[in-house]
Amino acid sequence: MKTANRMSAPLFEVDPQVANAIDNEVRRQHEGLELIASENFVSEAVLEAMGSVFTNKYAEGYPGKRYYGGCEFADVVEDLARERAKKLFGAEHANVQPHAGSQANMEAYAAVLQPGDTILGLNLAHGGHLTHGHHLNFSGKTYRIVPYGVTKETETIDYDDLEKLAERERPKLIIGGGSAYPRIIDFARMRQIADKVGALYLVDMAHFAGLVAGGVHPSPVPHAQIVTSTTHKTLRGPRAGMILSKQEFAAAIDKVVFPGMQG
Image (cartoon, rainbow, N blue to C red; front, side, top):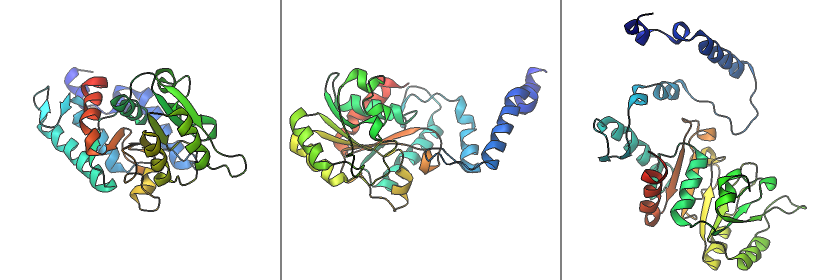
């Protein structure tokens, strides 16, 4: 196939094996009942946007402050995403550049912590997430992790026990949220505990952000200094991450995301 024709040829002609795998995945998704809560199900509009010519464009930096020319339309899209995220969740600042939720957490931690600082995070076996302190994850290798958990009787967080743990360990950061904790977290109480011991409070709402956006789940944004999330899962957007924060942390977070970790 000549180069000129190849540029406009459909995928099934250029790479029939990949095209066949995509067709099979479409069939699998439409013919099965997906019960994994964190799986995504996007609209045709999202698929169209994600398959656009923006995949050709480098846009290092932030809108109005890029290191490449020709970013004026990329700036429009990023500004829209930032402003929409702020409006949707009532946040003072939004960074929408993280590639995923794990990267959003990594970058948020790095913005406010030093290696070796103490973090309190929900135990993975009790419904937490790898990035909240598992010993094989970057979080467990970079920071001193003290896990908290749920009680055997109620399978919920005991906030009195959490407060005692925080008073004993004096963490720099307390993380709320998880990947398999199906209860509503008392964000206000956790912020009180964090304030009492001089810690920052971060909530990872990746698994329930869509419920917050829809107004059927309490929002952590009024309580936490920093809130991280994916943009897929219950939000049903493209696969990526974002960091919402109070304005006082905006500059530090933006600097870590770029040029600190992404480019």
